[in-house]
Length: 144
Image (tube, rainbow, N blue to C red; front, top):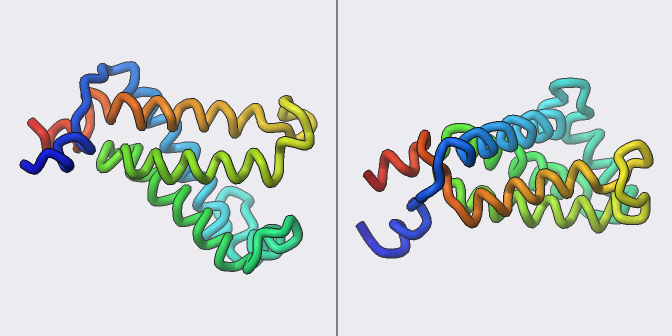
């Protein structure tokens, strides 16, 4: 196996990281399905696109599709443990955009629409990027 692929898929992490990866993946996949499909009380692409336009992320529909697609598909990748480092990198970027374009001016706490939840997801995504997928993952099965 090539060195680059081995570095991307390798992990020395244990079961704890596996649990963190799956929980963070479920949250992101659910948020992505809100944006893409209107599931779980979400607004779908049209409503999310209008919101993105209103906060200056234009074109809104494209930004909604990119954000929703990243959350949904990278979340699924985390859940099954496949290509978790590239998925985590996308989620890190997405979390930083959410923090600095929506939440930072509201302070830390969620009660004021602050950045605490996005920061927690950012921390989980960074941990996955650093440590890899963990013991129970497709990445580990591929690398043997």
